[in-house]
Image (cartoon, rainbow, N blue to C red; front, side):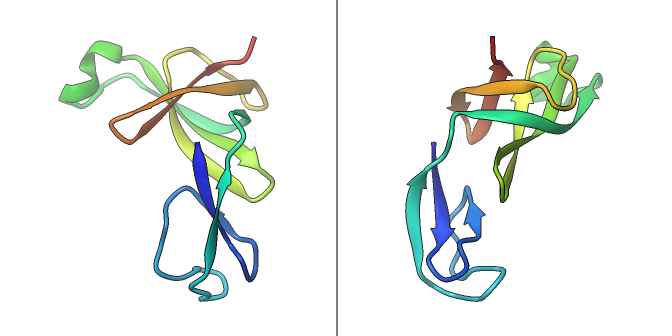
Length: 101
């Protein structure tokens, strides 16, 4: 996984923007994101939209990847806050994580 880091204030993002939302700098560097993270928060989706109905119930979690970066991810397993997870794949712009064993 790749992320973007502002060269001025070091704010991190998974998407490239025209300017940094923190300091308005327009210079970024690409960096490799860690593939392991920690569940910061989550919710269980029981009534899913049509494209995800076959996966329900599933978990949408906020994953802490670095000190300054959290991403939203799809997890098909039950998780708890503080649990270690790892990146499995990215499909249709969706980050898919699984429990780290």
